[in-house]
Image (cartoon, rainbow, N blue to C red; front, side, top):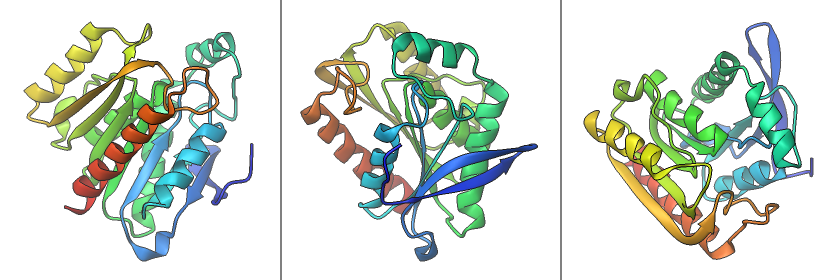
Length: 224
C-alpha cells in the first residue's frame, strides 16, 4: 500500500478492529464521505481516490470491508467476494459513517465502487445523515431502499458484463418508486473498472468526467 496524504486509523466493529484510511481535515466540520472499495479490497486506487476527494474539501474515510484481504486477479477477487461477510460489510460501512458523525461531521455522502456500491446505498437507508450516495459500475437494490430520500448518482460503464441493463433498471425503478432522485450516467466505450487507474479498463477521460460529476453531486447533496 503506497503512502498517501492521509493516515490509518482503526475503528471497533463488534469485537474486531477494522482498518480505515482517513484523509482531510475533520476539525473543520465540513462534509464527509465514506468511500467503499471494489472487490479488490482496500487498494491504492481507493486511497488515491480518497486523496482526490479530500483535495476538493471533503473529509474522507475508506474502511476495509474484507478484513485486510486484497486481490490482483479476477479469480482472487471472486474468492474474496464469495467469502465476504455481508453483516460485517454493513457493520463496517455504518461504523465509518458513525465515526464521521462522532467527529462532528453532520452531513455524509457515500461512494461505492462495484462491490462497494451495494453498501453505499445500504448506508443511506440505515443512517439519516447520509444525504447522497454515488455508485460506480455497481447497481444496488437493498431492502431498505425506501428508508431514505437521499439522491443517488450512478456512474455506469457502457460495456459491462458484471452489471446487466435489467439490474440497473431495477435500481432505477426501486429508487424512483421510493421517491428518490437517480442521476444515471453511462460512459461511452467504457468497461467495468473504468475509473480505477491500475486496471486495464481504465479510461482517463471518462474517469475524470465521472469524478467531476461526483464532486458536484456530493457538494450539492451535502451542503445544499
